[in-house]
Length: 443
Image (cartoon, rainbow, N blue to C red):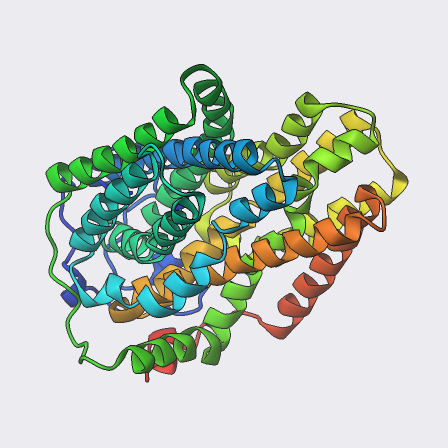
């Protein structure tokens, strides 16, 4: 339910989306585009000096933490009512499937209407839906259905947020702002689960759901007060829902550059398998839930640190060059699990994999900035939807495989498969500065 936002007016306003310069070509550095760029490399101070970004960042942090409260609360309610681990796990999986619906059928909303309005509407809608989940006596099937709708609204919200962030910061600040948001997301997920467990144990499940509803209200207020209105992107003619969906899919799959960047992002499903198997892996190592929590947190923690290092120390022109090798290494590192490491070594392996996963910053930034502005939100929503759906499916397969093989074997196998796919993508795609993506993906 997360990625996964808003920012008070910048010192010098960027051009509105309708007059924004063309997206940068496939050159390794987006700073080479004709959009106004800082005279020196951007810093995190430059990013957080922008009031609009600060608002988006604070809104994202609040909603991410609240979403974890809701996940913990709902799984507790399901388990208390059914006593079934399977139904509890399937309920948790419903947070992934809606991305197929939202990513395909609602993604164009992020570009059809003013993006700030899309985000505010999604926030207020999710506030009401989550609040309804907390009504005493609400049937379990109705709670799961409401959760499905809440998760489906994530796609247009995050698509609009990503496109709005690119309009506010069309230069190297976008990558740094993305890094700050992703680090916030990783820490918010880990901290939200911990805090959610405490809140549910002390206050109960329903208060946790009400807190989540409140975070959506906070997000909507921040967006309303601190982010200026921008009109919808120009040049979009109205089409049927099917035509819009087809155009979006053609955009991200027909263009070699966008397709390769999107698929590199989808590789996260392979190197995050240790999180899906954290509980059985800890049990196999003769440890309890505390160890499972450490396994779960190791990847996100490594990713948060890696993103800070990658964006702070690696110059923009080099990030795409490092992207391919890091994508291969992020998955390949997990193959070490074939040696049956103990808990300490396992945590080091998963953390190292998370550090290398910082390449996602380069892939994400290049993808968003390369997409044409009038479909930028839709492209992001489709790509992010595919990522979430892929994770959900692979986690189910990994869980099934772990019932026949050891968790270590499944994690290592997932890493080897992910590394092989990453190498195939790296050899299939190399940046060609002479091609302008916005001209090559029209239609």
